[in-house]
Length: 313
Image (cartoon, rainbow, N blue to C red; front, side, top):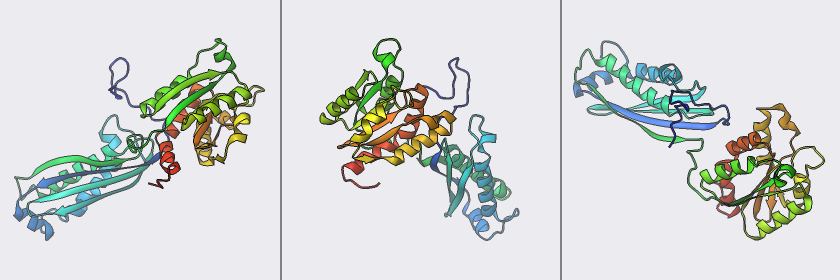
């Protein structure tokens, strides 16, 4: 696999997450600190010289989570929605669990791990005057949700991609958007049966969609023909065929595109069902296609469980 913290020359580099939508992301990390039973007894009675150990350690851990980007060089600065630390005081150890949440473009696992680490170090600092045997251990990430690593399993639809372009179909230009879509959906686990390029022609568009829906293609992505030009006819061809419009998908794509470039408001992208096949019409630019992949993958795949009657997860 590629190392995302290295550039093409092998130098360290911060990962650019500006092209990723913000989503709810959580992480839970845990660890422990071993100590003498006598130290545990003093701690539970608030009888240690430096005062209330666990309250101080909890505040330290939360502060550490909020300041992780200042401690770990290549971490992103995140607005945390919530951070909490729970202690389980046992006979010879204190177990520590930190949970962190955000609605950002990258995960919070480092924040959770840092919270556990600093909470444990704070306990160590506050108890070291009476216990020289303490040991911090087993700091680990227990769970994370959100982003592409979440929902990595599950059903993947049979997919085909239709590129609408007079210039590409005539050989005057090279297809980039269709290949980006193929790579993106294949990387997410989809079987992409075909990437076909045709001219901007309503009758031919309808013919291909009818062919693919008849063959059981479950997800059809079109790229091109969604603008305001006289040859932009993709949406005009397909809207009458939709038995259901998928306005949520349209809104998500519109919102993400308009947040990056104002001219996205001029696009007439569309999404709907043609029989049991889902059809999503995207603009033709490679930038718009890359943005769409960020929005659609992997969230769109849950729709196919719903289509099959499996309900909401």
